[in-house]
Length: 113
Length: 113
Image (cartoon, rainbow over all chains, first blue to last red; front, side):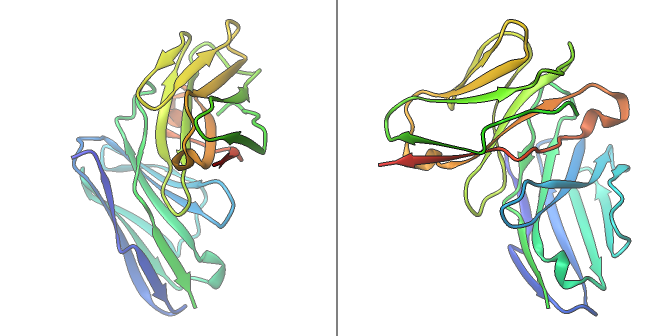
């Protein structure tokens, strides 16, 4: 298995809702990442998990809460989001070593209404 | 991560070679040069990476200047499916930032039939 699987592919949520995005990989990668991408912009790093521990938080608002329950699974819990949080949320994984590439999922298209 | 500079956009014709340039004049000795591409409505896809020597794989070739201050991604025969945004990224060994992959603006490649 050489893929990163993200679910759901599309999500519409209200500003008072609580929802979660899920990301899964079975490549034995030790690092996992959440990125946010607005239309016509490059992906922006949000969080990095290394060996299931949060190692980097790029000053993301607390309404985004990441969780790494095990080495294959990464969640992003969403609560009280704003319309400007609407974006494509990408998950990625890697060996962590500089001499390897990242594998990205296809993303979850989130719309906050 | 050290900064890279790429043209905003490039055009090519189908079945012709494409040379996508990237300048990285502040590259350090341990920085790896990574290339990713993002097709419309998809997550980024790893293309190729290298340190000092030129690299080839099934997708592309990477030519690295002798002083490592620039590199060129070469698509040997462009197809319509190669139309995408191409990102040139330097991955730096900087301890805690080892796991960061920071995207610049990239080059939008248009392939004409």
